Length: 266
Image (cartoon, rainbow, N blue to C red):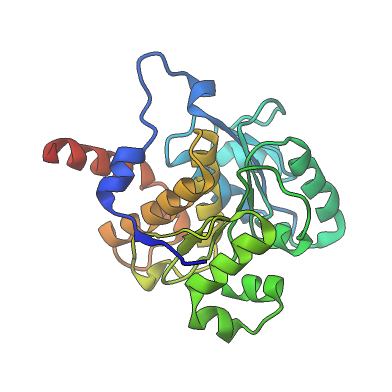
């Protein structure tokens, strides 16, 4: 199959962004459920939540094991009660896989578009719900495809396309290029950003942002390339060794800059 590779632009992001209207409310804007973090990696819960709040989601439900005080102490708007969600994020910071199977089954059982990240990727292949997005880095994708990491890094677009076809899901391959491959073989490239984002926690933030845009009703390929581009644009706008949670707090301002710039150019 011939691959159609498209470079996303800032104008694309502005045109696609789910801007609320006068009749919008928290449920129509999207509710994202997040199962992230563990006793070993409690920070992953906070990082994924920070990523989910930034793009403008209607509600974040935290459905993981991190302590209530930890979550609400940092993010008082996050809801800890179970309930309806329009997307799920599963896998960041699960650490020990002792309970990973049950956590993954619970996420799958909701039947909503799902972001499969980090430790949850080790549980593939399984039957995935429509609209699923996989977010591996090169090492994780190499393990999934049973090849050497160097092979993934030599042709990340081909690797993402292969994985999308094999698992029947959209694949965002995290790294310097960040291709987003759909099961039909088409590929979008996220906007590039500085290498400062290559640090622990960036992937957790990105997974949360992807989940927020999925919850807003965007298809997986578009949600993935928008979230990855938002993270890259923010790091470009505020260059330097800022940790991912600091950059995530700047996502709302970056979204507003995108939308305002589009209005000025129209």
